[in-house]
Length: 81
Length: 208
Image 1 (cartoon, rainbow over the protein chains, first blue to last red):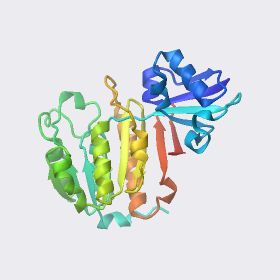
Image 2: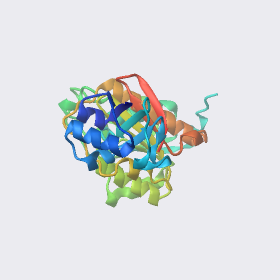
Image 3: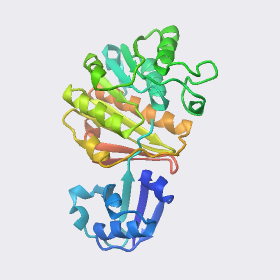
Image 4: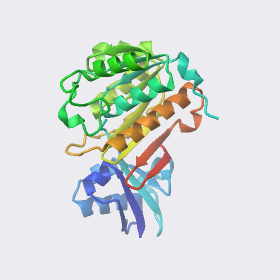
């Protein structure tokens, strides 16, 4: 199980701050989140995604492997002022 | 050691005089900038009163930029130039007259336009945004593409309420980052996003 924290609009939309979920890669995780909250996969993919504090663009993007205990952040930016 | 003396010689443009903009204007004026240029076409309304600094019974219906300009001139004596209009392509040249731009807007579309114009005109922009108790900040240099990455396919989130203390926090951090940029002490923040979560009372600094 990996730990996922939601930030910004992701948290406001899903109405949860933190969940634990099974996934072997970031792509699988995105699909699991899309299924859990009944949102399109492409919407989840748009979030900024961090694995243990590292942006997935600096890892293997959606092919980044995940292991038990990994900490992920999904951030969708605020736009209010 | 904090050194804000660089602000005394600088002109800062604040685009948006709503929640963030009001506290940013207040913070920069009191920090002692040489000049402020402020811009907003909106007027104060009753719904602003929970979080916008100078919104109140006596300012409802008045243009926000004019109210702030009046207050700053009468009370703090800072040189201030007021534009009672919304930022757009036709008046973007206002950016040319400043040393730094503060993004205090409230929509994705407007923020991307401002960022694009700042890039074209070679100006650094300090992005700040807030929804309810969460927000983020970024220093956007002209060569950075991070604001586009941040907001790719994003839309504005409707139906939320933003609390005053969250607005003040993001605005204070924007002023802090502006001070760092203008005094040459912001290198460690380039290429990063500052994520503020007041629900957990946390601030994270992450690579974009």
